[in-house]
Image 1: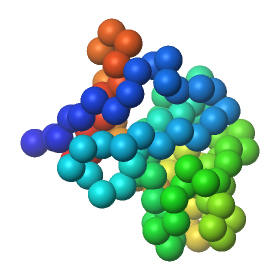
Image 2: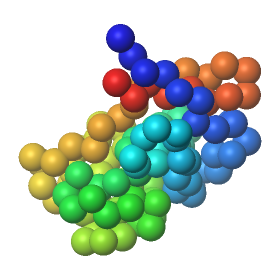
Image 3: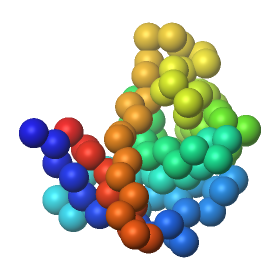
Length: 104
């Protein structure tokens, strides 16, 4: 069974920006952004060292962690520096102007 939570409104998501949204009852925030016009949601912490990913930046479809510079392809979740690391992509449902994310 999925845990679907409302994360933000579509208007809160700005192309080219990383925005982390707090989710009640969840330790880490959820980042929602666009990758080549596709809405993408990922955990707000780096799987390498638990550094906040919102402190990083976007380089095209790559999210670059501000902590150690590890890059993650937002289309696949694959780390460009260490193929063993994967940034989980959450399924998204848009209802009206709200972004809902399946965390489980």
